[in-house]
Image (tube, rainbow, N blue to C red; front, side):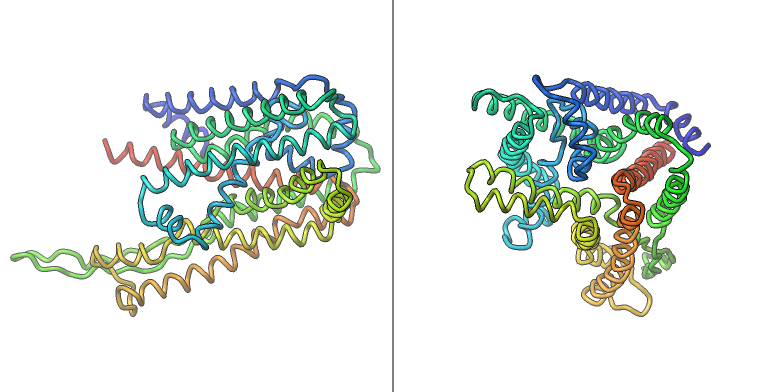
Length: 424
């Protein structure tokens, strides 16, 4: 009901209505790209590979469902996300890159994002070469010569660049993160097929698996909603200022600090990092050097070990929760803004003491948020290990992404509507 009311209010404003239709059109363009297949592919063998390898299930999530159709956008936004992760990690090593991202405002961020776009191109090309060669050796795609391999790699790279462009156009409309919405739309588009498959293969013997999974899905949804809504309210007091015969300030308010500052981004980053080693191993295996071929087999075996995969997934989600929170929440900048506005935390001196207090508060909240998000992320894997059903882990990750993106998008819509109310 709340969503329907929000949409009714949104349609009252022409500019918001136009932006919403543009977002829907861009997502429609993405779905068209996701259904334009590359030539000479054996879909039956591709389907069989999906059923035996959870790695490809995760790539399919990243591609927004484009991989299962073996479309020209089969890599999705994986290379772009990997490029952004690499650059953000480099901010801890190169001071100039850190200044560009944190201290130079919108101009610096624009340059930083441009570096990400440039880095995406070679990453996408390398990943497509390795991936297509691997599928060719499996007999899934027919590549008669190196020219066909390079041609298809260029096409797939172009598909990733187009998706990157669509994602940025969607983000500019301020209805949510474009990358997240593209992944979200791909998961939603595949839902009817998954439900139909579950219906056609349903049997009473599987009931003992489906019922606990449904319960687990509800638990995951509830946990993500709780995590996104929970916040710590830090009390603030504005100092009184006397101007002539009037007294200004002295008001009490609070600074809301969310437990899940990073939202769904740690999950997406964690999956990107998990995909990168196998992609690199695939590319190195092209050299036909026995060491690299053995390395590829070892990496593939490791990622298909459910227990190790779940443990690594938890660690990465937890680590990226801290990393992305440090990027989105800057205690030093907030402390400066509070001091310049004449606001302070009761019992804490403005300036460095306030910055230290904010760092400690955010660190404690992020610890809880990271543990909670990591635990919710691996719950389906634990269930998968017990039931030996591979689909449940991939389905659990999809639920995490769908719920988080939906909540963030609703909040963005509410924010845009609140701005219109103030304008009136």
